[in-house]
Image (tube, rainbow, N blue to C red; front, side, top):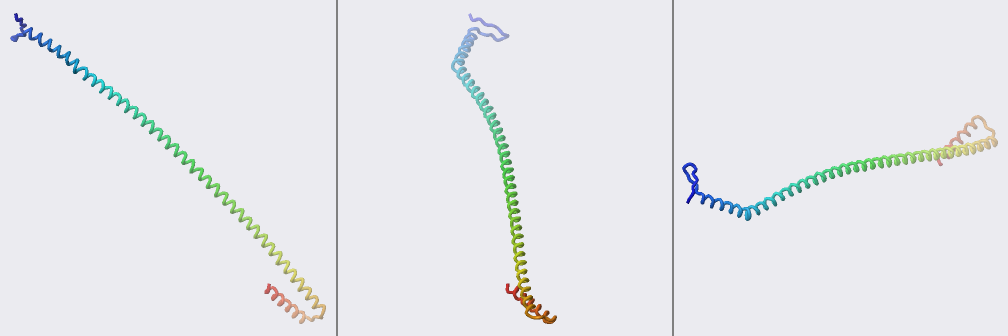
Length: 173
């Protein structure tokens, strides 16, 4: 009753073949149920995790690029702001320099004007003093001339003595 199927010299026994086939199918079902499901779940979880990691890495890369762009923008803004501050400081310095120079020039002009006024006043005082001295000298000479008649020699002596007296008076002042 054993049926055999001949393949060349070898014979296949159908009972064994069927037994092995059923065992193979049962093993496949057992493997599918106990091993294939968990392995598939594990592979799906692994694939999901890798996909999430790739997405996270892509998101982190984009965030890093955005952050780098923001830093670059902030750096450019700070450079612009620093340049503006420097320019304002230079302008303020130039304005202060100009105001200080103008104030100094005004002070010099004022000092010159005051010095000229003082010199003019001293000149006027000196001229007034000389006029007074000349007037006094003239009065004294006239009174001396009136009191005595002068010969040319006595006139010369009189003038010389008054000039010496005048020199002594100016030396005392």
